[in-house]
Amino acid sequence: MRSKTRCKGLQNLSWISELQIKKWQRALKEISKRAFEQFKPPERMTVSEWADRNRVLPVGSTSRPGLWSTDFVPYMRAIMDAFADESIEEIAFIKASQTSGTESALNMLGYTIDQKPHRLLYVMPDEDTYREFSEERLQVMLTSCDCFKGKFDENASRDGFLKFRGGFCKLTTANSPSKLASLSIPYIIMDEIDKYPRWSGREANPIKLARERSKNWPGMNKLVLISTPTLKEGNIYKAYMESDIRFRYHVPCPHCGHMQPFLWENVKFDSKEPATIVEYATYYECCECHGVIKDYHKPEMLRRGKWIPENECKGRPKKIGFAINSIYSPWITFGQVAAEFQRSKNDPADLMNFINSWLGEPWENLSANMDIGSVMDSRTEVPEHVVPKWAQLLTAGVDVQKDYFYWTIRAWGAKLTSQNIAYGMARSWEELESIMDKFWPDEDGELRWQVQAYCVDSGYRTDEVYEYCNNHQGIAIPCKGSSSPMVSKYRPANVEPKIKGVRPALLYIVDTDQYKNIIVSRLHRPIGIGAWMLNRDTELVYAEHLTAEHRVIRTKGGRQVEMWEKKTSAKQNHWWDCEVYAFLAADLVHVSLLDDLPEEGGE
Image (cartoon, rainbow, N blue to C red; front, side, top):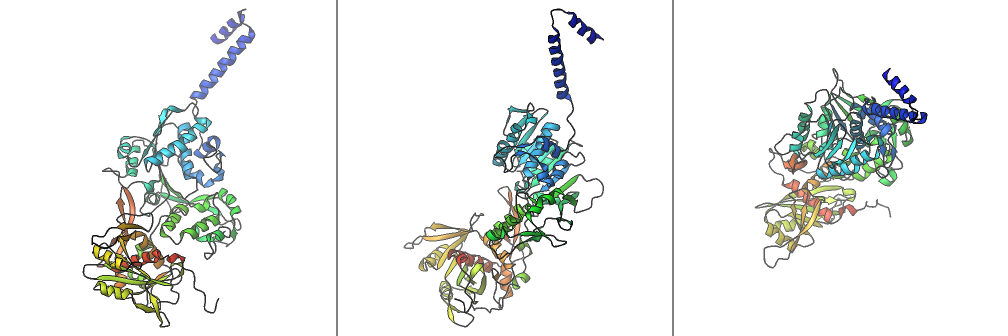
């Protein structure tokens, strides 16, 4: 009644026009509307719904700029929406390249800032990564989406700390244990966790520290773990396997409707063709009806796909895991995946990257299963001291000891096909010289093969090695194992011998781990082209040397690395080192350039 009386009083004032009163009424209505919008609770929606309404991908930040559409990457919907599910405390996501993993993490951040403002922590592997992420990804999102206007305080923010109304986003690295240990935050996203150091100083590992920081927020805490996998012992694979329930995305066959995950084994192509051909002649085969699935089928298959659990869970799960590979990516064709494999398959380092980044699977080195039996299985029908008919050159490797020399001689052919033809021990430099100068017979008995180059380990009796190699320049080459991982398999280095009158030698530093990886991968191939083989008469003692080491995981420079170490039960490994040096010698004479021999009777 009081408000009506006041309005009538205003209307009775002759000096106030009716038009002015209407202006005041409209202004009061607008102020009330703004106040209501300011304090009304946010509309309940999922993360994917929020992203579809509000997320804008600026030009230059993606190959598909404009409004975000979860329908384009429908497999990300359940992962993002799990972030807003109050019953879920931990999400582990194994991602492959080009699957929108980081963009989805940004959607979780944006959703929190706009819908559920609170404290939020985002952890990256190192400082360079987090600064790049803050400047080029996160801050770009906050300034390009209208929903953050009036909420994101750009003036009060900096690279590692973004202030918004109702909370903040702290960005830090896994190398900062003090920062991880001092914060109490309910929402934590940890990106690329397989690149984190295993230990942060004297503190617990970064993931355990993050879990400790969020446990003070029961009913609110949310931990998201995202990464491309590395090893089975890596952080993301362990988190995925420890999830209460693990999901794989299944899609329907366009021909029979059978639901199935996209698997590498069903990508069909001719492995004998080069990558340039494979890329355009690859298809996917249904595991049920064996129908041919083309790239144009993929969008509809993804749209109709579902996350299906791999295991059973009693009760309500709190930890859930998701895993996906690049075959699902709408940006990548079946042929591109196959072509990448063709380019990577002959190099263990490249193959590991393919397994991790493209297939989204942890790398399991075959050397972990290497035993004497598998080594002896690589023996061919060609006897000892005989050069196979496919051979085109011989190289050798020498491991120097106090009173004797271990040596091995290996035949090489096209596509790195190789076979050991002889091995043994020499008691003197003169005896070693006579062995390396010897002519070896082919399968027809003709003595026409001689070692073209051999590498001699200079880690022991160094000056003697330099002198010997100086006297056999162009054939005998000094080498030394690297004490740390290298980018390339080997590199040259000039050394100055201590003996007067001896000219400087060109020493080759060799990454023995890389060579041993390649040898083991080729040892597990079937006998034939491209395989690493032994002669028919190879003895058990030689296989014992080759299996004297195994791959182990060690922490170096704050990071987990795989490396070769001698087994505690092993006695000798000298011929294993000789094989590495023989491989190095083959590389130095450009073994990779060898062509297939013409067939008999051909031109």
